[in-house]
Length: 191
Length: 289
Image (cartoon, rainbow over all chains, first blue to last red; front, top):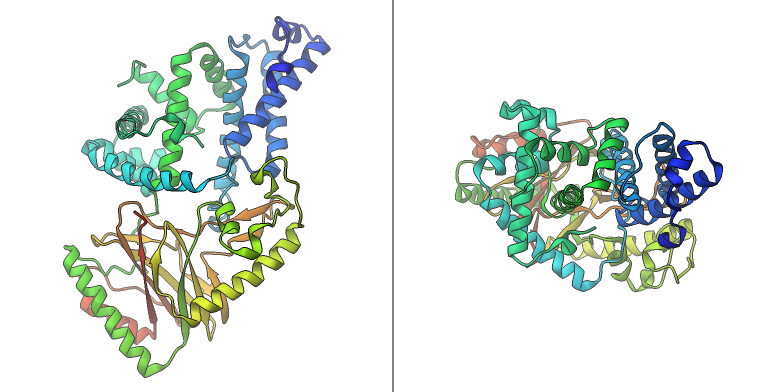
């Protein structure tokens, strides 16, 4: 769908020059990519249109400010959609506790096979967490089980934020590799 | 493990955690569109992060004043305390009569599975959930009408579970049906087979007399997005726990508990709860294998 709407070469620069047709093509393309990506990421149905509009707005504003053209526009828009959704979820987390645990509608059906896979995945994940180094396991436990914010974890462990981020990155990479060895690839981890 | 520089690894984390302001976010997204390796790293991080949040986790107990800290140093001591507590409360129930009834109900991770679990709901395509059922299918029932039908189904299932006194089952997610004869404060705690304690209910619930579904109704209209149905999958059975012993404790609304027995004094728990006039129900949930 999105490929048919792909903007023409030079549209980004044309938009920077203020050309309306280029702006329209970019907006249409961004909107289409955003709707697909937001659905894939499990954004709530009723929120998708507003979030897609925000993707369009921020993208056009970035271009209009003279932001350099992305090499791969579709990839840029996919991550832009994630960025907008991430901000939206962050705002939702500030809602009262009873609201914040609301389950967003999943982006796709879960067949019985998929449910069975998820059961196996949970077991494999628990095993992989147990195999992490003590330092990595502690950040995973604080981040996911106690659901502490970065600032709280950094304070509890006495780490600089950047050090903590790197440790979390490496812990997640180790978990992903462990899961891959157990037969769970990226496609199994996708939303 | 990763060819990325440590500063880029940190940046990736800041990005997926939403810690960047819009300008920094946009600049990083532009980089992602230029650097496939970086983009792949972020995709992998997002996927792993999501799996951890969805599949692994149940909130663990913070040190709150109302803890049900039955667990001491070893799992055997914890198991013995649980058995002792259940026995004592069973005897107490015989003496005092029923002030509340509790039953276990298996739940489902997705709304589709929940719909498929009841014949009355299987063919329904409510507004707000219709997109989950494939674009070729259009809604065949309004959200309000669906909620009425679903409430009737739920009422029947809850009545059946309470009548049959269902106190155990196998599930990845579960709900609790509770019937209270008076306004009460309800506490829900879980204990894994190894004695680890899990906070299933973030805070005590103040509930009026009547029948309730915990943690909350599985289907409801999203107040922030009218026209969209919200689904709640229930309590999560922590991965790797084996068997989760669930304690549902109720006290009259006017008599909240000041504190709960700690793991260091399990034999005092019964005295304290007895003095407070609490009633405890025990459920057993087996993790699916």
